[in-house]
Length: 292
Ligand SMILES: Nc1ncnc2c1ncn2[C@@H]1O[C@H](COP(=O)(O)OP(=O)(O)OP(=O)(O)O)[C@@H](O)[C@H]1O
Image 1 (cartoon, rainbow, N blue to C red):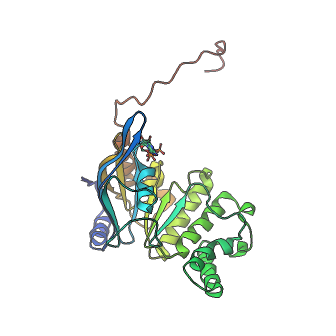
Image 2 (image 1 turned 120 degrees about the horizontal axis):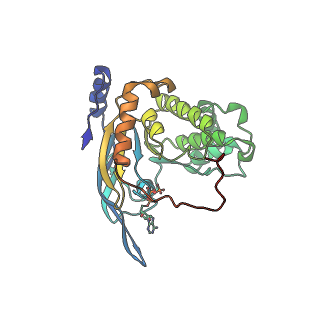
């Protein structure tokens, strides 16, 4: 089901154009079971959706809805029990250069400089070191780290490391970039600046992005559409078209369209009346009237 939130005519027109673009990623009837000593866990059940070329899609859902399992299957790191994934019309049968990955934990090679980290992919694909270096420089420049190309990862902040991870993933020129909670370990300020920076990168590069997040505001701020999953088993709940105009700015969080999208998704993930878990009442200290 596709949710239709109220949207301005120019936003609706943008969605019409977006849907006419070719499909970059198609997920068809994806199912994943894990056999455990306690029985079979259905991590994903009959999940289908598609993402258009240069679309920015976020995936969100309650804990355990299968986000990580999904991204591992999309990356070709896990085999589905049923269904298939097509990238640019070709079935995914393992990891491949058509898909880039950025994870929450920094996956840079600590013994290589920024430039060498970014050159690594092109060199593995057969580029000479001169052309890999030239290419790496362009990507490093794009993520704003030219001054740090000879630095090592341990000399960089968390946000800078994630910029290098993005440059490294893009240097392989993938069709689709999968980002699994890439800003989850960053402080709020760095996170906000990385979100804005990612949108700038997305504007300048021909790339389709699928971004996994727990954060509602992040999902609404970044996405064209948001795939909402249910948990236990993980399955399709709704594809939400974000009614917020582009280009996005941090001030849009106060706009009615932003609030409506956020509210809608929050209700899908946390239905009213559903108690998640009882908070245990601990009485470990004596009552103090000044501590309330
Ligand atoms: N290797 C595994 N073996 C057994 N069960 C697994 C395995 N990997 C995931 N699961 C189960 O599959 C379900 C989905 O897990 P997954 O980690 O994909 O969810 P998630 O949405 O990423 O969760 P979270 O938001 O908490 O990180 C969960 O019930 C989990 O316990």
